[in-house]
Length: 427
Image 1 (cartoon, rainbow, N blue to C red):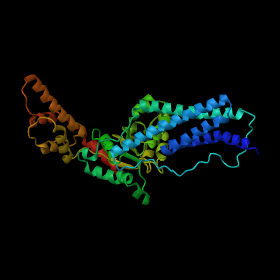
Image 2: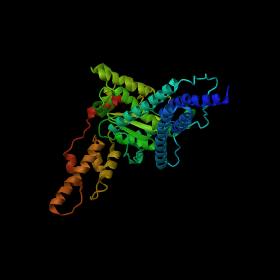
Image 3: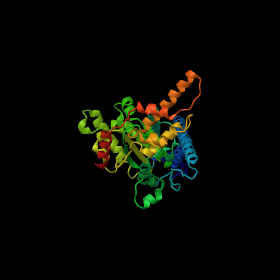
Image 4: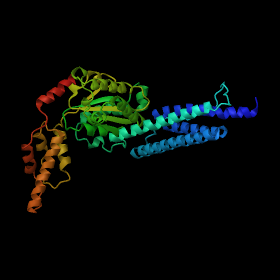
C-alpha cells in the first residue's frame, strides 16, 4: 500500500481512538482517578487536533473546536485536583493524595487489525464529529445539573472540619466506640485490608435531641482527615421533590469523588420511613434508591462513610438497620454528670463570673441535654447583661444568676424517653 495512504489511515483512526479515550476518561473521572482522567482527556484532545490535518476544512475546524473543549475539561480537573491536594496537605502534611493512579497504563493510539476506512466518503468524519459533540454536550449537561443541585443543597464547597474529639465534652465511651468501630479502619487502611476489615460504610447515631450528634459527626470527619458533607433530608425532599432517585445518586457520586468523605444525613428518618407505615408511593420509591446506593459502598476503593442521625430510630425502615447499611448503631445519650460540669465550664469561660461550683450545677441538671445547658448559660449571661445596661453598674455573673435559670427550666429528656432509647439499643 502507498505510504501516503498508510499515513492517511493513521490520522483517520485517531478520531475513533479519541472517542474511546474520552469515554474512558469520563469513567476514570467518575471513579475519582483525576490524574489519569486528565492524562486521557489531554491525549484525546491531542489526537483530535492531529486528525484535523487530513480532514476537510469544515471538519478540521470542528475537530479543533472539540479538541479545545476537551483541553478545557482537563484544565478544570487539574485545578480541582490541585485544590484537593492543597486542602489535604493543610489539614495533615503527612496525608497522601487519595488519587491512586496507575501511571504505567499505556494506550496504543492505533489498535492492530483495524479495518481500513473508505477515504472517499466524509460521512464517517461527520458522524464521528457528531458523536464527539454528543459526549461533550452530555458531560457539560450532567456537570451543570449536578453543580446546580449541589449548590442548591449548600454542599458545593466542602472542607475538612476543624472540630476535633477534644472539643466534644464528655461522652468518653462514645468516643472510644467511634475510634474502634469507625476511625481505626479509616486511618489504618493497610492494616484493615490485611485483616479484611472494611473501612467506611454506614453508621446510625441516635438519641435525644440537642446532644451533639452533628458535632460528633464533624469531629469524626476531622479525626479521619475526611471531607464533611452535611445533608438536610427535609431540604432534599422539599426542593427536589420527584427527583430523589437521581439526586441521591448524584450525592453519592459527589461524595465518592471527594473521598475520604463523611456524608452526613441529619434527621435521616425523614427519608427512611418504614414502608409498611407510609402511603406515599414517592417515599416507597425513595427508600429503595437510598438502599441501593448504600449497598454500593461496600467494596469501593474510595473511602466513604455514611452517618445518619436521628431522634426517632424506631421510625426507620428495618432494611436500613441490617449489616452493610446502618449496621453500626451508636447511642448518643444526654451528658452525664462529668460531661455536664465540662459543659458549664465551657459555656461560661469567656464571661465575667464569680467563682462557681460547677459540680453542684452538674448534679442538679440530670436529664438536661447539652443544648439545655447551653441555654441556661446563655440565658444567665443575657439576664446579667440586660441588668448592667440599665444600671450601668458592672458586675460578675453569680451562682444565683445561673440557679434562677435552672429552676425556671425543665429537662428536654424524660425518663420515659430515655427508657425507649435504651430498649432500642438493646433490641
